[in-house]
Length: 295
Ligand code: NAP
Image 1 (cartoon, rainbow, N blue to C red):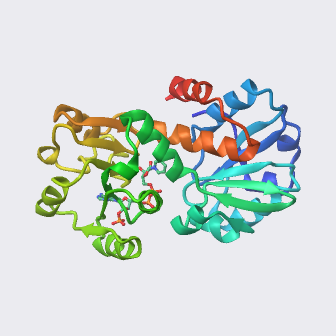
Image 2: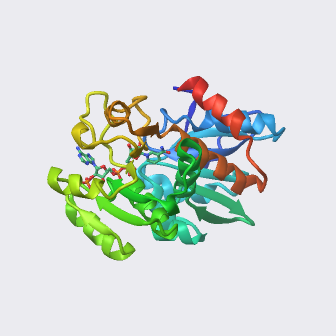
């Protein structure tokens, strides 16, 4: 756990404790919970490296506080904020405008203050594309992709991004099958039930499996896909990073698959947020070092 956690009340009141921080608090992450967030470490490393006189802080924002907290950003002198669980959909409803991908994925994870107005973006999908490129030297548009947990917030954002990339095939899987079916109809994708026979068949026509479900967040979770369905040459990207390597990643590697965990997506969504706020390239390697140093 890193750095202090401020409250929405302190932001809204432009409280002295926040106002008098040096460097000045000008960026943040809003979440509930938020104490576990790794974002301040790597954003502050980037700000220091680039000589930007600003500090990135964690702000605990409860469900009833999101509107007021977002609206307090301009008057508190903030350049923007990141938004995490459970506020990504709520933030989309609150911003003055949002880019197309944020609207389609029904989620905002990055807000920029511009002339007193709030503009929303979502860097999760673009961050994932960069992570896939970096980890597997591959482009999503060239791959047949299966998204597990497609009915969740991250899963929807990833599925929308893959559809926007026009990947070669898009298969959506979700525990509650109806959610995958609805999204598949919207994205011209294929919904597959989370059952062994159906998964086996769909995996035979899949190059890249992305786990965006919550399975793997607890150390004793089962794998999101039974080990005997994994194979040599499959690409497996598990967005979960909370427990280090998930069982899916470990079992995938044992089966000969190429595997990667979600820290690279976390890094790149952060780097892309930095690029939005400052209109300049992010010092990705500095950010990576700060992130890996504390994970
Ligand atoms: P969410 O909206 O609550 O969605 C959770 C998803 O997991 C739903 O699809 C849900 O299915 C599924 N699920 C939950 N328990 C399950 C179980 N026991 N078996 C099968 N499926 C289950 O959460 P979220 O915000 O999308 O986050 C999901 C994951 O993405 C988290 O692990 C998070 O760490 C990860 N994530 C990573 C990054 C990154 O930068 N690496 C960014 C964002 C999110 P139902 O629809 O049936 O409930």
